[in-house]
Length: 196
Image 1 (cartoon, helix red, strand yellow):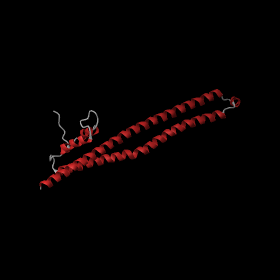
Image 2 (tube, rainbow, N blue to C red):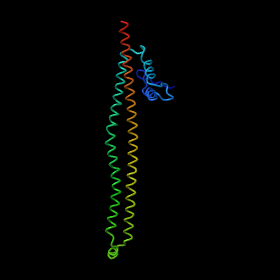
Image 3 (tube, helix red, strand yellow):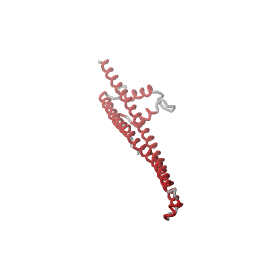
Image 4 (tube, helix red, strand yellow):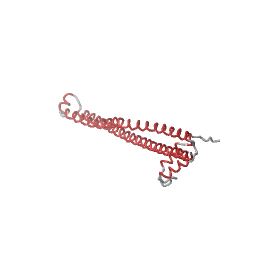
């Protein structure tokens, strides 16, 4: 037997957010904001909930909105510093490749005199091969490092932008919901005032 989960104030955040995010889409139940607003007014208006319950619901929505805002600020605040660190690492790898090439060129320039090397007992070809191997392995390491850090930067940017976009949507959702429920409360108050 499946238990039915009960939600505070008949408000399932996930379902309501999906409905809100699909407003205006082709397969959406609500083609525009006014239709969605009418749905919310029908759900919570018409005296279905007492004024104190609706006030509590507004405070519940405000609390949820504040939680989303803190997450949004956290993502927005940490994105630039982390991005700066990642880009600095990528530049370090790129400049390290340049440094490896410069080191190789300097080493070759100091070993130009093959006669002197042979006279001192060193094999110039073996030294050149060792330098080339060092150049090749150093360049491969730093190029792969720069590539991988570039991928990490792109993945971080994608993930952060998705999170920020999601938090922006939730913020707008809660703001709209709060506005509508507050309007319902005002309508109930004005209806009571007219009856009195």
